Picture (tube, rainbow, N blue to C red):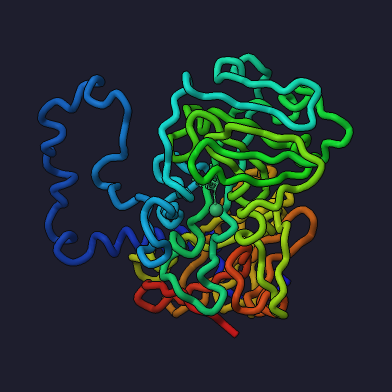
Length: 421
Ligand code: MTE
Ligand code: CO
């Protein structure tokens, strides 16, 4: 498939020529005649002292980056308490999401729970019902893993048509962090699971409790009881002091402010897994237990909030890919709405159930593009088109929309959310 691609891939020679052209371009006009004061003059910032190390005990982004923030879509939820905001994925690079701009989803607001007041109970079908304090959890052997957390509703507003103009809004209900915690299996074994115990029911300490049932096989596999993210304590909004990390599975199961784990014979069939987080299908019936987030990808730049700001020549196309089934194997990018595809470059060795960053460096000829990306995971599963997904799911679903996204990039570099048929 890649061999048939006739698109403008940048060779090293072309790239260098392009870079030279850009340099020349910047030096044309007024600047070519007069020296650039940013180079020839001693600048203000070099004439005095900068801030001392005590000015910022805990650092915040520099003021020029105040755009790189979470945003919400006001009409989406009734109020800011039971609400969602979105990660600015269009403005980030790499794969790790800083906690300070990682999307939040609360069903009854973010609560403040101290380590001293924290308790985690394991009860139900266990030999020894147990209660752990935060200090108790710190004494079990720990693990560290990078995982993505994607809300099942990510891209959920796009089922019936292209609606939100920006990768932050269409795909920003996702974050990717390095978690430190204790495997759930360790704590369950400490309590002693009885043979009839086939599920765990996990709930949070907030008013919503966000209770979910998890089959025992997953609970004993890679689920983490996590207390650090990206090296530091969880932020309040992500469940301080302790949250559940359920790798590859829908974000709703990642219970924050984790307070109780009950071992049961069956799923509880709670609100969050019956009236919510089930998928409407094309024939009007509903599907439950769609836990795993299928392979998905999106071009983060260029995109509507990250237009091309230069003329023709070298252009970096970049985006994110992930799969709840394991590692990303490959990502293809199309600039002609899916007619031809070029294999993108993965920036690093793909992680298991973690975000992968991809790049495609092209020599843009300045013409309009229909930009798409298509992920394939290690199981061989290929991200579907919108049409393929709609055949199964119809137009009335909310959750689990992992279709290929299209951005229409215009000749002036601006981009828009569109659909191709
Ligand atoms: N856990 C509790 N206790 N309360 C909640 O409202 N929201 C869930 C889940 N865990 C929620 C919760 C949903 S729907 C998602 S998508 C993730 O947390 C979001 O995690 P984040 O807010 O850290 O992004
Ligand atoms: Co969610």
